[in-house]
Length: 225
Length: 208
Image 1 (cartoon, rainbow over the protein chains, first blue to last red):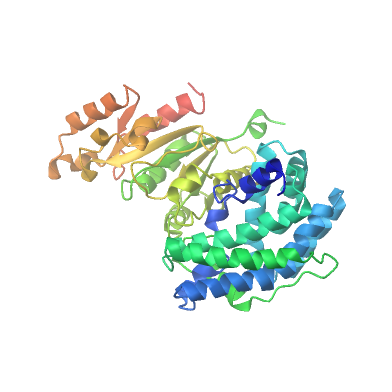
Image 2 (image 1 turned 120 degrees about the vertical axis):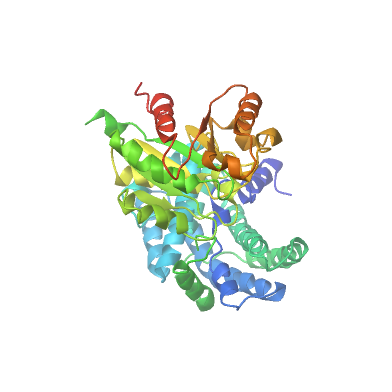
């Protein structure tokens, strides 16, 4: 077992109650529900599995690992520029930056010097602050190893989606538990193989991406994305 | 460098149940504060639409760019209390965009009596109830009624039509709040709004 201090650190940051604004993002799920493309627990499980394998694994995880390894501001900024470049829809970019900046803000208030330093950079450049990049920076600053940071990031995605699905009324709490249990195993499988930071980050989740773009213009919505 | 531009803006929360008149109060506070030369911005936490933000933006009372909307993900409590980070970031962004802003009004989404604002988010917060919601609201001692810095009882003109004994309701409100401020308004006419502004000037802007 990893030592208790490291596990507790991961639990704290992976907790859905960690105050970084994550509850306000559905990353396309709200739009998919509104368009009738997600109607039940199987649909939710499919969407989250796709997000995990076709987005998180191939894009967010790569960005996070690169940001975690970055030893200077210029490298951190370069990873952030890459995140901006590979996120093709504007509302998705805006959402990623809002979520990242919320995490950055609370970690700066917590007194993590790396968070304070990067927040100062982001204050002068509206295109900085993507979530996966900020996760890499602040998780490292908080003391997480890179594998633990990857685990926390992946789990946050799974728990965030299932929680949003409950609030959207598509699934109940027991179905949410079944989905997170199944995807916990899927995430463990992904984490069993090392990340591939040398690869170009890329995603292929077109339905969710389009849903985020459509949702942005919808009058009735509860989530930021 | 002016003193104003370096001082963070005061954050004032406005919470309360659905339909109690929070947006109407914001619409009254904006011109009243502006008349006193207060440099203002507004954040709304709409629940399912941007209706409140749009209503304030289109009111003609304030530069629409000074009105930000923060989504609550169906969690109106969370976004002002357990996890106010998105509101904190929105307020910081308004301060960066409008140097010299002195006061940011944060309007919560319509909620219930358990709604309270984080002290990390706001310097002062008021809770708005209305007489048509029932004169038993103060007696129910919800955290919003008890713990707010200022309790506002709105729609006082409706009291006779909904069978509310207003003096008794106010007496009970003051009793459950231990004598802390309770003010009455009729936001349709603007009655009582000046007293709130004076309270903000004294308690938040330190002008008196």
